[in-house]
Image (cartoon, rainbow, N blue to C red; front, side, top):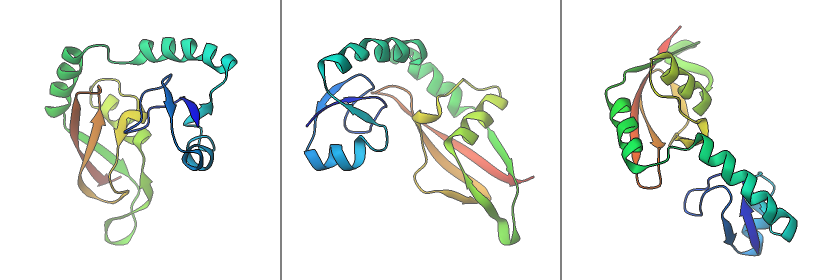
Length: 148
């Protein structure tokens, strides 16, 4: 099955890339979740607008990505949230919450889709979060989740 990615998918590609995947994976996972659209000649024209939007918000060079990674290493991110008994959160910390906390700590402006949370963050404490800045550069952030 031939698809056009609308979002970045780890291991497959960037938005606007034309990929070839098995029918079941595309039909049951990528298309329903909005990660990809079916390839057609008309959809191929949409690739250009997707690529233009991506270039506007993307970290363009590896050097720039490394600079942002250095900024993130020296940054201390604290996220205040409501908790219950024993330090358990009401819900979980999302990638959008982390992006907002980085912005509040005078860090770089991160796209929430580039933040990868390994396991859902549901307790207070320090948690490690990965950020894909570029295809060749990843950074890790230590996020302190504290009671509000």
